[in-house]
Image (cartoon, rainbow, N blue to C red; front, side):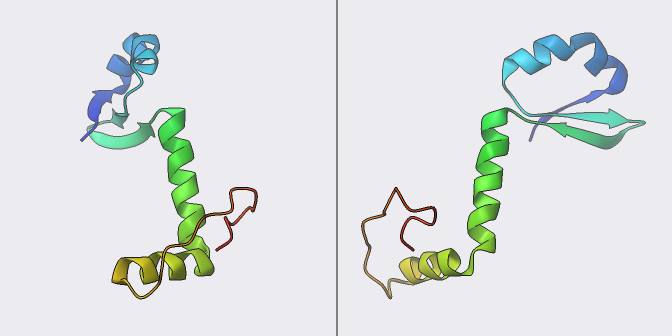
Length: 83
C-alpha cells in the first residue's frame, strides 16, 4: 500500500517524494484525492490496459492460461506482436 500524505505534508516534501520513485497518495481532509506514481508504473498500467481491451490478445492470454494453445514466437515488429 502506498504511503499517504496530507496536502500540507506533500507540499513540503514534494521534491523529495518525487525523487524517491515510489507511489504515494495525497489526501484532502483525510480522503484520498490524488495518486502519484512513477512514469514506469504509469506506462506499464497503460500497456496492460491496451492488452485488456484487445479481444485477440485476451483470447490468446486466456488460451495460454488454460493450456489449450501452444506458445508461439512473438513478432516484435508487429504492433500486436503477431497475436
